[in-house]
Amino acid sequence: MASLEDMKAENTVEIDLAGKTSLADTMIVTSGRSDRHVGAIADRVIKDLKDKGFGNARVEGLPACDWVLIDAGDVLVHVFRPEVRGFYNLEKMWGADRPQDRAS
Image (cartoon, rainbow, N blue to C red; front, side, top):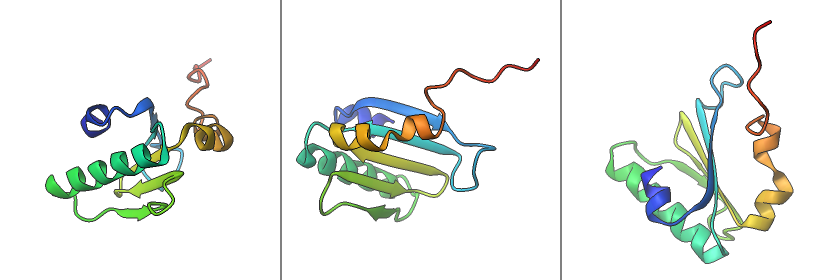
């Protein structure tokens, strides 16, 4: 999260996936202002993960930089250009914009 903040990523959302899927425990969705900004954010996150001992994350989408997925094991980081993020709307798909379920 600190890497995203340092790189001026926009509209960052953290989604708790625990109990929803075995893919990861947390998904972070954020935006860059342009394809260049998306690439710079992704490069910084990848470098910081490696520097902090989390190994080499799997990365998809880096050449085009419309949508970069960084799979760091328990954490998935999606970095989008705003229009691509709006099209896929991952927050809605994973329920980040829904109110928490209440026990009856």
